[in-house]
Image 1 (cartoon, helix red, strand yellow):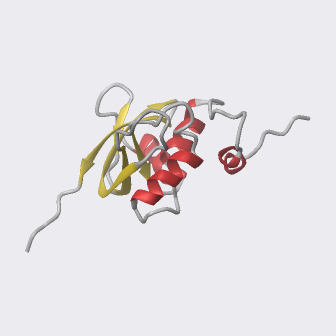
Image 2: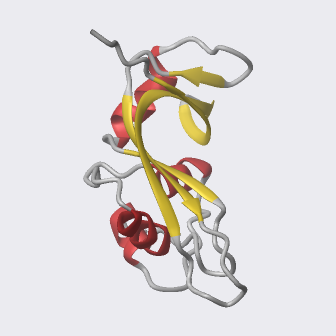
Length: 143
């Protein structure tokens, strides 16, 4: 019997795996990071490389949601769509937005990190997240 590697093993794989087993697995690989909440430029550079988003070209922008994948999946399970297949969380998430600094061709990817809290909008298919759509920043009360 063939046993497929776990998500953690797939992420650690240095070559041969492009993350395309299914849309949910790809979503988790690209957007969910339970442990990393420092939101630094180094964090972005490291995560973008580890998660295979710098191979051919530097991905222009990516968002990492700092939560358990089950908590992100709950957005699809516990909310009504706000439009066709698009769901908005009813709780805020800590998120790091990594934006590529335009660099000359063939130079290493370099990212600027922005750490924010907000409500996530995701596209769901069969009650599973498959695409990050948007982030609605949480309002900060001023006293």
